[in-house]
Length: 120
Image (cartoon, rainbow, N blue to C red):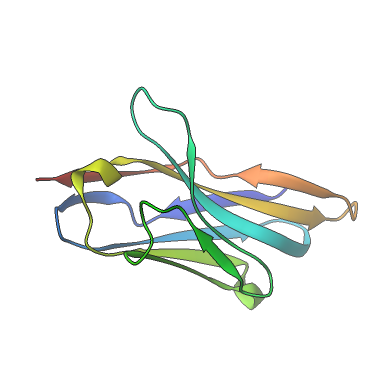
């Protein structure tokens, strides 16, 4: 069973920065797309950024120019550098990975989430 563990969340003042990490563990043959999502109270979960195994990226308009997604394939780890944070970035941030495990079938795995709270 593959698990994703996020870390790096916490409280920060507006204008500040945080770096989230997502580490995958378990029997992993390869990981295809990875992504960060977030869910604010009373709102639906939304895509923040995605990155392919080749390093191609895509961002939500609301975070373009402020957030940077990256990954280290050799370590099955993904990062989200968040700069110029705004109060509206407050949410629980989740990582997701399209994993090919021991069965050689691809399936999605979600992390447990990490809280980011931006104060004005």
